[in-house]
Image 1 (cartoon, rainbow, N blue to C red):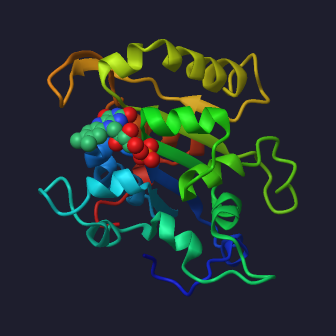
Image 2: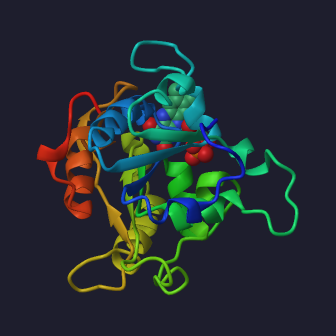
Length: 241
Ligand SMILES: Cc1cc2nc3c(=O)[nH]c(=O)nc-3n(C[C@H](O)[C@H](O)[C@H](O)COP(=O)(O)O)c2cc1C
């Protein structure tokens, strides 16, 4: 579901002087905040947003309520230039020389924000599994910056905003995966080689009624973190896009 000729080629956009935000959502109730995040980031005049939804995330966006619009409505948000689903990877039968969508999106993105990050996608990405479009982008990420160094000066970062039930968050497997994401892959003062930033969940009463940690960080704080990293000036954000 995109507005431009397919297949998509990142090279066409390298000189467009825009900041390229790849915004992804996996299957958590917090998907309902995806439109808010896209709208807020899309207010920056120099930002281009491409969205990936997993199969589960798409199920939350079928026009059930005002905060759960159809994907085609999300595509209308100013600044959003494409919305991709898993099938888009295989839309055109691939032949030699054709671009490959998950690689092109990797090359295009200055930053990948996964908000929300489901427990399932968190588990899969830390194991290197790549069985959908989003996971393929993450698996093909240029973690050293060396692969894309001919056209990109700075190494792109992945921001992750986990969102899950408190029992899921408290499960011991979550801590093992966070050790990989934060301690091994995380960008920090002590690990300049890192390429991941975890935007940690918060405590509150969850949509399921449970009370505790695991709720996605407030979407406004997620936007601020991305704006800060990309040096997007919030005074450069316009209300009408
Ligand atoms: C109504 C509903 C709400 C859900 N909320 C969450 C959630 O907040 N966090 C989570 O990790 N999984 C949640 N799940 C489970 C995921 O959707 C499920 O694990 C799915 O396989 C995730 O797929 P994905 O990671 O490919 O998006 C929910 C499932 C349903 C049916």
